[in-house]
Structure formats: C-alpha cells, structure tokens
Amino acid sequence: MAKLFQIKRVNGIADDTVKAKTGKKWEDWFKLLDRAGARMMDHKEISQYTRQHLGLTQWWGQLVTLGYEQDRGIRQKHQRGSQFELDRRKTMVAPLETVWAAWHDRQTLARWMSGVNFEIAKETPGKTLHLDWPDQSRAVVTFSEKDGKTKIALSHERLQSSEEVERLQEFWSAALDRLKVVVEG
Image (cartoon, rainbow, N blue to C red; front, side):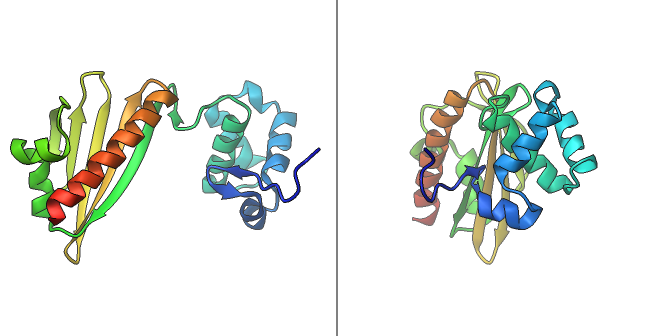
C-alpha cells in the first residue's frame, strides 16, 4: 500500500516541481522511457530521446535522463560515465589572496588539511587549482571573490565508487570548514 503524502524526489527535485515545469511527475517520465526501451539505450541516446520525442528542453531532458538512470539502477548517484565525482562549495569572509595562500603555504595547509598527499598538477593563479591525488583522482578547485568574500567551488573527479564519494564528501566538508576557520580567524 502506498504511503499517504509520499513525495518522490529525484536529485532533490520533488514530483510537484517536475510536474509544474514539465507537465509530468517523475514516475510518468520513467514509464514513458521504459516503453521507449530506454534501459537498452546509453545516456546520450536517452537524453536525445527526451528532447526529440518527449519535447523536453536540454536541461530538463538531462535531468529526467539522470533521474531515470538512477531510479532504474542504470547509474548510481554521483556517477559520471564510468566514474564518480562530487562537488562542494564554500564561501569565506576573507580576501582571495588569503584563501589562495592557505592552499600553497605548507604550514597553513597543515592546519586545515594535514596528512593528505597531493600534487598541484596545474594552476591559474587566483582562479583554479588542479590537484592530483595518489589514487589517480583529481580535485579541481575554482576561486572567485566578491565584496571581500571568497567562494570556493570544488569538484573531485575520477572516483571509483559511490562509497568513495561519500567518504570524500565528509572529508571535503570537514576540510573546507577548517579552512574557513583558518582564513577567517
């Protein structure tokens, strides 16, 4: 028996929202894709089908495709192709120069991210860092400043499992919280 007031959410978007934007609830989209044989299609084919045959915009087509793949067990959460990735964002009340220096000064780095061995593979000063990890994964950190606040957008890519994503989500959340304390202190 279905639960009363059960709301289906996919990628954090509720049934009511997807229906308001697309005209159908999640399960309605999923049934249409099942009937079209989407289980036998790759990601690109499903996304293309949602746009060409179901009339979705590129953005909603991509979202419905990802939701379908996750719901049907074709794709796991955080999966991109055959690998996984995670994203984290943090805003700090500190100038960009201070936050940037905290990633480069070994003593400061040790205060908020000790015991991690990574190499800076590439950087654009004051804008991006590409960090290579020993497990062959890569973290890309993007920096921007506005009104004395620095925003960090971090993407950790080339991960091998959803369990690794969960472990690194906790790691990065805690590390960025510590960085915030260091640069705002």
